[in-house]
Length: 431
Ligand code: 4AD
Ligand code: MG
Image (cartoon, rainbow, N blue to C red; front, side, top):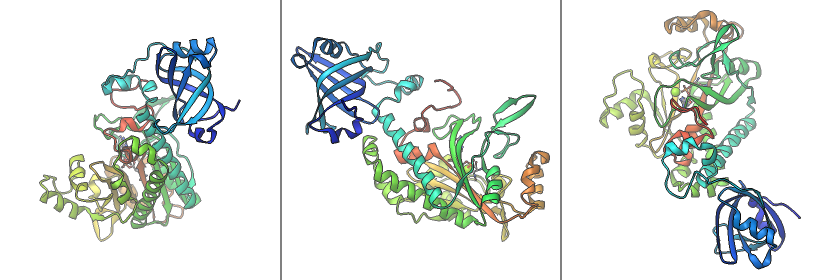
């Protein structure tokens, strides 16, 4: 007998098939039992009638507990009253493993508890939906860059030096010396893009963020793209095109999941039109002051500022030309306004804030070395990176998009911890 995945059950109407999965809900009364099944791809109710199955099957159906693993054969019927549209009229039920009393019940659980049982929490419809959206976003990102001729060139995770400041580095013992878990693959992308033209990496990055905010993880996934001869404005356009591609893909293919998440898709559809405003940092600060923020001159935008600012726009907005002093050492200053960097942050609407940051990079060796000294970074550790300015330096730019923040915004989540299968935060390393 054919085994079908529940996402394809519609093709099996009128046929006898086998479904394998878990019973997420069970009840029986008298001579009829209902097993609500999920297999990771979909859900269906199996109706087990005592008189239509053998004794062993009836025993299995009535013994099955929540999250027991089962195999059920039966006739697939269209069932308009069912939320999934189909029903399985069981012919046989096999109990593969009878689950112990399931810790996640029907009552409301606190997030702390759910995080402790994250390995089981992932089985709930809402978490499934988020993971499917995440998968769609990751896949769309890879496809976008493939179509644009970017090569995937993965950056290493063990690194000898810092990229984004030294305060939040995870230090690890690397044989007889110290190494750090990568904060960003960018420096390596500058090397690979000089070799291959346009490259990106997409992998985990690590920051020992002591902050307990809804935007911070200690391990998160970042897509980092870098292109030779791309300037900071083209860099913004690339990010906009990328996000538009991703949004359209998710709206198109994950509508069901967004619906389950009760995500209002109107703001996403607006963002999918592109045309993201570009706002100079100085204008953003003026706007913030008029909105009651006390942001100081030459200060970075805080999370609150980002929230206030993004509420003024109906789609993602680029803030560009931040003061160089609040940004990383590698950002190229604007020749016309040397205190400002040729950089941009992309802020998501609805209060989600920064999801992507990028810049044109310093391509002049002397200036780069000056910045390394000013930032009190170890000159020797950047020897290979400085080489890139010695051997055919070219103008180049790139950016990094935080995957979990993007997933959070698109799914409309409260906290990034739901946007990754197993979140790592200040107080959480398990499960
Ligand atoms: O702005 P960031 O620090 O930029 C860089 O690391 C650059 N080197 C990227 C580049 O130009 N290649 O980080 C980029 C993005 C942020 O916009 C944010 O979305 C995400 O990474 N991010 C985090 N996401 C979750 N938890 C954290 N602790 C994050 N820190 C940054
Ligand atoms: Mg940033």
